[in-house]
Length: 543
Ligand code: GLN
Image 1 (cartoon, rainbow, N blue to C red):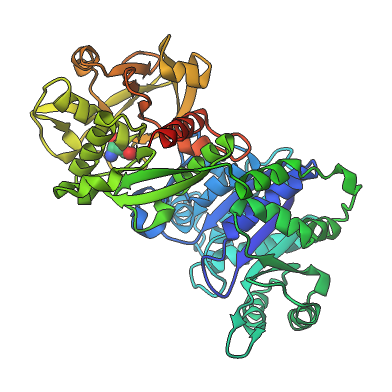
Image 2: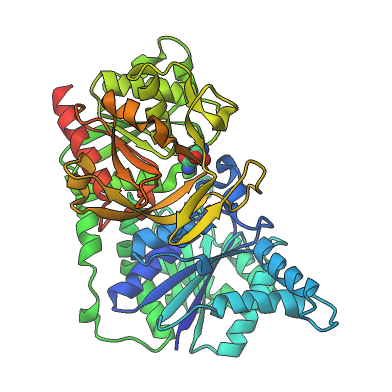
């Protein structure tokens, strides 16, 4: 029977609950357990798909096509367990579900209330779609004390009673700040946050205390005393140089031991295998060189917008034993003359996914620079579409080439995707379809052409990658583009949708319609990122 671990956060947001949950998942796996991780978000949006990346960060897409919170990316990167649609829920989704059922008359005349109807729907989500997992880790978004998260806290409180202590554990992540003028660590915010949690009936079993220095034993005892917790269960979550050091640091502080102790599972410590994390930590700490990659995008002011991308580049660095330095550049600057010199000296240029016209011409300028100067170029989704427009204009002489995403256009080299196949089901969309959840989303197969660079990189003829896009390269332009040197090296199995383009005569020029960054892991770097960073290493020897 699965056990449920609930992770809440207090004091301030951004303490890294997602990372804490992911790292605990990895530690439980290292003890041989099967885990699953889930996120419950208190906002009213049905999913984060329509939220601005500036506010909410990246939208993480699962194989089964759900648009979810970026924390699901951490979960996958640390555990390798593919996230599913059933691993992410928001208040908006819960209410939509409850209200749809109310309209159908499924509540038989009852007055619909937060308790029990909304809390029942939350509990059904937590308990649903669980099979043989030993542990299901559920992270509650937001900070304890927020109005929005109350129904979630009530639901997990009820589950604590219903399943019992043998099957539930409450972990609370707080902050123990160092106050310079007093010269000491302060425990009061943690005490207050735990009181807040206790006031809704939840007694945390373990406190994970973020601190930038070791928390002395007497301070732990004090926290334990005031928060009604054994002092051994007050764990320091110390700042570490790399996020991939977190599992080792938590283990050194006894986090996983405490979790196992709670469930009566303290087995033979020899069974614990942390060698994967030790080796990643070592490689990250002692790189053999550095490469500099320019990321030319739009959401560069909030780096969380490109979370998986930044991690995938780090993974490419791990595979090549180098440090990858990222230079985030707002593409709009290239729309002014002379700005292109910002790209001189970088070892690779990457244009990531994006939406809308603003900054698009600047991205196209960056593609021209990479193509003409033989700098490794990696275009992802929007970055692939811009590469195709660039080639159409400057290699094939199609001057009016553009994307209908920016309005009507003379030569729609990139156009609205109105129908495609999902397995044997036809999906159809129009210009006036709802925006939420209607893109081409999730895993689709792609066939790789013989003797292409990508076929060599992947070492296989068919791949499956995750998508999130509404527009697509128009394959009627394929003959003219290929004649000019842009090869269509990956196509959908029905051959209708161009998935990958490359320039064979360039040292490394690849554009992909999908998001390979979503599937990269530190212990299993994505082949495209490994190969792109290898090309950047070669480039670094030239410049
Ligand atoms: N805006 C483009 C589209 O919808 C690209 C999307 C993306 O980069 N994820 O097709």
